[in-house]
Image (cartoon, rainbow, N blue to C red; front, side, top):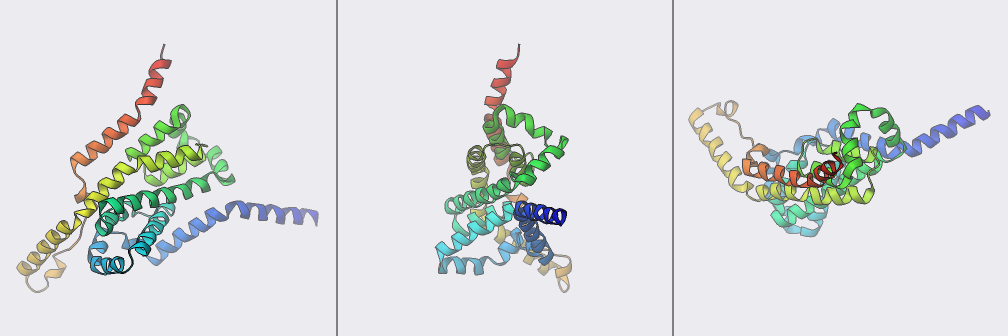
Length: 262
């Protein structure tokens, strides 16, 4: 009897620790099972732009709050749509308001992942992760603020991984939130600015699509495609600027290593 009771209590304790992770994984599985992740594309944004702008015009504050909540959910669930959400923010709300809303939403979503990673399960994973986290551990130990700021400014690793690793490696909560908020500002506003000019790209692509249909004649829809790629919004200048910002963030780490050198 005592053994069965202890087992039941142990399972209850584990469920209490694991429920945030279980809920997160369950929500992610639901999104993919329902196919909702397919809506996070620039093409879907272009196709629904009039309806979305009508909703925003009817209730700006509620639409903005819904956008922040949706962005936080996309980041927390590690869905492949963060860049599209940032572009959508600039496209629908303007680069300033949309960029600010994207920064807030992304920071909230990343913080949710961080807090779950810092749970008891997070400590267990950190012990077993081994080489998976070794590439991050030294940087966080030497200068967590500068290193994490660099990882945010220059997206060398996937966003979800940079959200997870600091929680597993015991980075301070305040350091994580501050570097996340500050580090994503340049890239976020760059994409928001790109989204602000998306209308011209949409019209150009639509013109090309209609021209293709006219030349192809009947059945041209099979050979002509109307699609928009977020990559077309990136420029070499934008990428170079983000890399430069990341290198600046690494200066304190480099200086510390130079001082330690004999």
